[in-house]
Length: 277
Image (cartoon, rainbow, N blue to C red; front, side, top):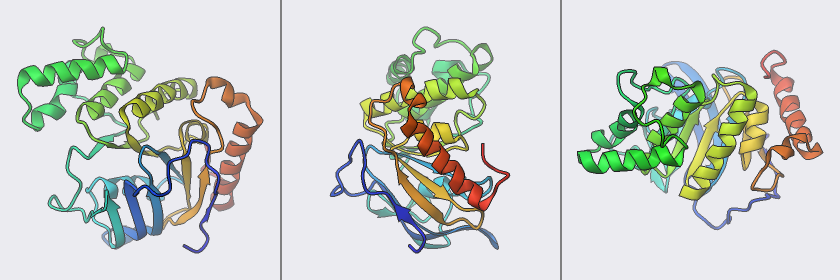
């Protein structure tokens, strides 16, 4: 696509020969007569963590909804594991393929942590004993094995985030779509939880498409970063993150990290000087 510049060297290295988990080609997304994004062309490779950044309202969340089968493309092609996605229940990705974690978390306040995690399995028809065992395993995986019976109001913001992540993990979805899941947390907390999340997702072999407004978060967590223009959005640039994995907090103080966040900021400031955080 014209205007899209993609870096070539990648530190972690996912084999180019592998079929992308997500492939968008000349994709246009719209709500009625309003075009949210146009001419989007990008891939998400197996096991990759890819972030979408851009001005508010530029279509980042719309792209996630389309990949999840919740928004029909207006034109172009969108494939998940080689299968076309058109926003209908028949052709959209199956629930076990894709799971969402949203900013508002959507936890049920009257259900305990373990029962919030169980609900994904309950909807899938999994028996009571099996879903309880799997939910407890998922909570242990995110470091909440000691609080399964607490209710959301009894948990900190970071702990509630972990419950939502456990619910996504327990579904066995291989692609996670994360829409600003840490937006309510302070910068240090979101980076710490994000670091733990990346480690967990690598252990489980997950592929991630992540929406954020935090440039530090995108730089610290991602393998690649897709920079979008204001609405109707196109892809301005795709940046390979030149930071080796595993990443330790010390990387936040390196010249390479600061150069990357400065570059991201400059790209966004070119289009919208009032919307960079």
